[in-house]
Image (cartoon, rainbow, N blue to C red):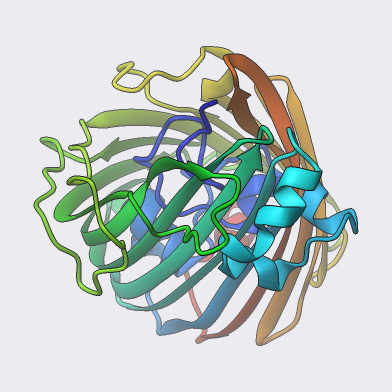
Amino acid sequence: MQLHEAVGRPYNYPAIRYINTAGNEMGGVVAPIADEVGNSLFNNPAALARNTKFKAEYLNLNLESDAGLLSGVGLSTTKMTSLGGMIGDLNAHAGTTYAAGLVNLTALSWGGLAVGLMFQEQAKAVSNGTTVQYDTVSQFIPAAGYGLALARGVVRLGYSLQYVSQAYGTANTAATNTSASFLDGINEGRGLSHTMSANFVFPFTYLPTFTIVGRNLFGTHFVAGSMFGRAKNPIGITPDEPMSVDLAFNMTIRISGAAKSHWYFQYKDITSAYSIPFLDRMSFGAEIGFSEHFNVRAGLEGTQWSAGIGYKSTGSEINLGMYHEPVVLTGTDSWDTRFGLQYKIYFQDANTRDRDGEAKAKQ
């Protein structure tokens, strides 16, 4: 059996370290979405140039669970904190994958400069009756970035630095091991990762925007150790990650009155640095805002669809979505249904370069 590297990240593509529920709702699109400070830091630092005023995301919490865990077959989300505590349930439902995850990203931005701190833990497990295989990722990543607008915002350039401290990997344990831990026998390491992006915003109707993102510039090299030493009995150092490049496109179409739509496309890893199937590299997403508060989203990653809804107030936002993640079991590709919940508490001063402000300026 083999499981993909991490819940909530594109198949076999660890270069994308942060993806939220709203992005998952739209087929895993991350690079062209620039409304969140945290997402910009990790996936499109050029978008930080839009934040001319103070903006804070005090809490950006994302929770995830799969269909198996929510089906009421004896497992609970609290049991996902202990592999040994769920051994009996895994054996009783052999062949069923159970997954859960938590990601929180706190970030601040002012005048194009941003700092953030991300913590995430994701885990999943499956049993064949005699052996349990589990996959874990635990990351603690401080990040800082800057975005610069040129030619009156038509061209934006950005850079971010991430100090990646992580424990992750796939391991096996006996189906009778009631003291097993998700953090036992996995890799651990720390290293610096560099991300750069460029946005080209054409001042026409619909504001078509092209984005190019370089991840792990010059490669990311990991050394032994971690800021918190999460792994138990680590078996090695996190493998180095090669540089990769993503391309993205997005545009905004106003429907009527306050109603508007946003359309996204992302092509991941155009240099083929990672083993990503061709169809799974492509993500399509759409978001329709029926008012300033209510949004509906849908997307497609390869052949797998996703959907969700969101509600936004002046200081908070909540998103609820359903999407799919790939799982490889005994050499057979399959997809697992996931459910995500995102809750944000934020503050934003008057911003002259936010998406709606730009759209009004071009009318």
